[in-house]
Structures are given as C-alpha cells and as structure tokens.
Length: 364
Image (spheres, rainbow, N blue to C red):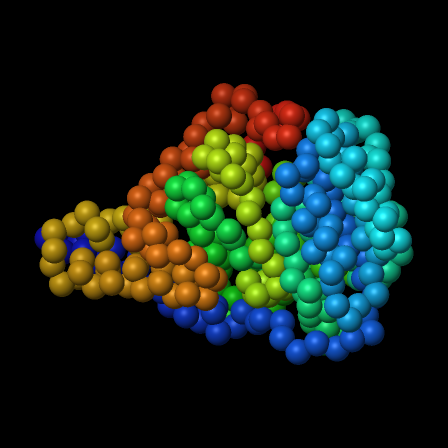
C-alpha cells in the first residue's frame, strides 16, 4: 500500500507521454506547395473591431492561390462593419448576417450563410482572431489534393498567450489532443476519435453540403468538434494537421475572456456528467499527484514523465516555458473551470458569449 499512489501516478503520467511521442510522429505539417488552387475563405465576425482588419489583410496577402474572401458581419454593434467597408479589394465580399433563428448558435448560423455564398469547392472557415501566413491557404489546399479521401481537415493554430490564464490554460488544447487521443487507432472515420479546431477548418463544399453542413450542428457552441463528429457519423473521413507554422491565434486578451470563452464550450467537450470524473482522475493522477507525493523513486519518475510530456508539447507547438513549470497548477485551474461549467449547466445557467445567451441541456 505504501507505494500504491506512487505507481498510480507513474502509470497515469506514462500514458500521455507514450501517446504524445507517438502522436507527434503521426501529426503532419503541411510543407510542400503546389500552385493553381482556388479557395473560398469564410470568416464569421461579430464585434471583431480589434481583430478583423488584420485577419482580412492576412488572407488577402496569401500567395500562389486564387481566392475569394467572404466575411459575414453578424449584427455587430461596434466598428466591425465600417472597417470591412473600408477595404477595396475585389476579392473581398462582405455580407450582413440574417437574424439568428431559434435553436441556432451565432457562429454556426454565420458559417452556414457563408457556405451558401461560397463559389469554390474548397472552403476554409477561419475565425476572425486567426492570422494566416502567406502560404497557409496554398498548403492547406495542397494537403487536400494529396488526401482526396479527406472531407474535412483541421489544425490548431499557434496559440499566442500573454496573460497568466492564457499561457496556463490554452496549451491544454494540445495536451488533451496529443496526450489522450490514440491516433494510431484512428482511421479517420470513427466519431469517437473525432477532433477538430473551429479556428481553422477546410472542407470540400460538395461533401459539406451533402451532410447538411453547419445546419446539422446548429445548436453546438463547440462547432469544430461537432462538425468533425457529424462528418464521421455520416460516413466521411476527417483529419488533423499541425497548423503551428501556417497560422496563429490569440483567442482572448484578458482573464475574464479566457474563463468565459473556455467555459462556454466546456459541456460539449470535457465537462459532461460521465466524462468529467474520468478526465479529473486522469489529469490529476498523471499531472498533479506525482508532485504531491513524498519523494520516492516512483514519484520522482512520474514527475519527470509528466514534465517531459509538457516539454515535448511546448517545443513542438511553440508554447512558453511557464506553461511547463506551472503544469500542475494549470491542471487544477482547468478542472475547476470544467466543474464550474458542469455545475452551472446543471443549475440552469446558460453560457454567454458576444452578447448572446445559449441555454441547453446536458450532452454526454
């Protein structure tokens, strides 16, 4: 019994390290570029006056590709629309969003309208806070050409983190993906292994339309994950790529934005009644427990394994050293946020985002 917790910590820290090493080998970076592609870039925008100009400029600076850029202003109450109207590039088309119907989330409704307006077979959905590199679109389209069996491809942009909660919590996107998703078992078709980042998604319009597009996930705030799951459930294949070199994103700029932003999606990810207890056990055992135990061989080894996992992720995805050093604290804070989201939903509180309220029942 003396070493039982030590062994639990060791095994729980070994699992994410093994999967991280294996998954990092499998996660491809788009590299070589073939010109001659055409793409529709679609950006939903609601109250994005701080970010929309740079997002549009980044897309219009794309190289070696034919593109149309469609931005939908979703009833913004700030200067978003006036900024968009200041551009004169003929490749840019600005739409005014329709009134939000009942049972739709704002972003999914905006994306559905954008897709209807798109002309090209390849469509890239990009959040307004994402900055694409000049060769990003060409690389994405080239990757889709090389993988004709893929209907949807997604990647997590490099996360720009400046405030404490940003660098403490946002890197968990990669830890959860790389440390707990068994990519070697995933052939791209099983919904239970689906993963995607709504910040950057490229789809084939024909297949997107055939399975209902964003209308099929209209009530989901975690739109990227929901769309990937729906594609797979409909018999289509989806995939992941490493978008660190082709895009960057600063999702939030303050602690309150980080907390609210992560909380609004929580109950469609980790914070389900069945899932969160499991996640709590896994993350605490592998990334917190080893640092709390007396210093014995197993606990020392577990600490080393846990830190090694975070170092590997930090190097690959350009995360800061502080996210590694404060990993145990970050796990605790993340789990507190998830449990708050679950309890809040149980009590009937609705997520709030961009001035809209989204009441919903439990999804497991």
